[in-house]
Length: 283
Image 1 (cartoon, helix red, strand yellow):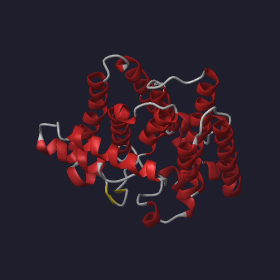
Image 2 (cartoon, rainbow, N blue to C red):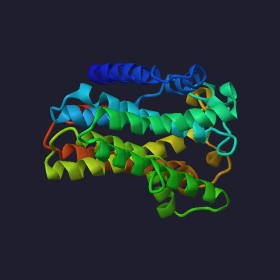
Image 3 (tube, rainbow, N blue to C red):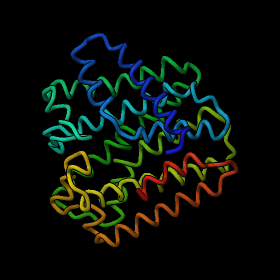
Image 4 (tube, rainbow, N blue to C red):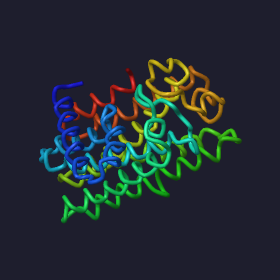
């Protein structure tokens, strides 16, 4: 990871801790911080900040928005691990939130992260706050991530075709990745052609990221993953390796990488930071 991205990770973490420090109840704050501070690449906020920097925006101004996006992502992980969902015991190499704090507090910690994200956006951005909220809400809600989660749940007894599988993951995983790019675009002036290319990049990267995750679930151990392998992989339902075979899934991943790279190469500015982030698909 480039020095710039590493510096931004540090800044994102500092901003996240600043936001968590405002939570009054210490029990709730501990549960929220447990998952927020558990690690992770900060991929989605890094996408947001990279877009701002590429078009000569002020990265520091966008840090609260980046933190809000990470809050929503972390909420989704806490809730996805719950017994009623994936019922996972391990996340990022440590016990899941509900294993550490109990199911009730884990639900409330996720609820708080989700709702606090929108408070951050409205408090810090009186001018563009409504647009930022709309992008993030649509990505997280019934037309985005939650819709994808429901498709995932509905598919537990059904083998989806490739089009439906893509639809599920473009919503469940891709929507917040696309939101990071779209939110970053609100902080800078971007040529219309570049806006379209950035949207193409985000869509290709978002789907590629899920394909990579599916491949990892069948090729890496729990220790290597730092989490429990996805239940759908274990049950052989609705994953790219199951539908396409491992070789086919790897080819699908290569295709998404190529599409994302082509979109970045068409931009009118240097996209080195986004290319560094895209490299996670080849790791």
